[in-house]
Length: 124
Image 1 (cartoon, rainbow, N blue to C red):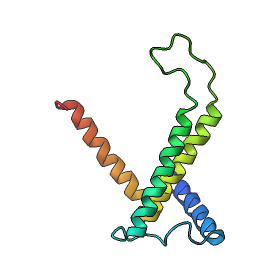
Image 2: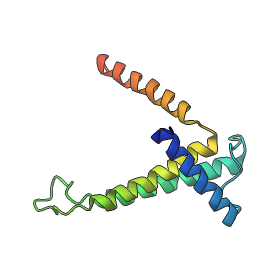
Image 3: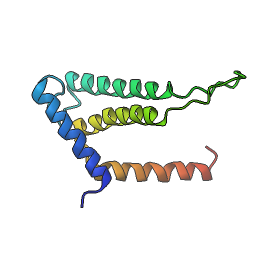
C-alpha cells in the first residue's frame, strides 16, 4: 500500500509530466543539474510561485492585526486549504525537479526536527 507522502510525490510528478506533454518547456528535464543556469531559474521560479500561493492563503486570514479593534470572523477554511495545497504542489515540484525522494524528505525532516528540539534545550 502506498503511503500518503509517496502518493503526493507521485501525483505531483504525474501532473508535471502531463504539463510537459501539453507545454513542453514548462519544466526542465529532471532531475535538474543545479549547476545549470536554466535549472536554477526553474527552481527559483517554482519556489516563487509556491510563495505566491502561500500569500494567497494568508489573504484568507482577516483577523490578525493587533491594532484593529473590529476584525472579520469570516474564514473560508476550504479556500484557505486549497491555496495551501497549491503552495505544496509547487514545493513538491521543486523536490521532484531536484530528484528528492519521499524517503530523503522524511530523513531530512527528522534530522531537522532533532536539531530544533536540541535548540530548545540549549540557549538558542
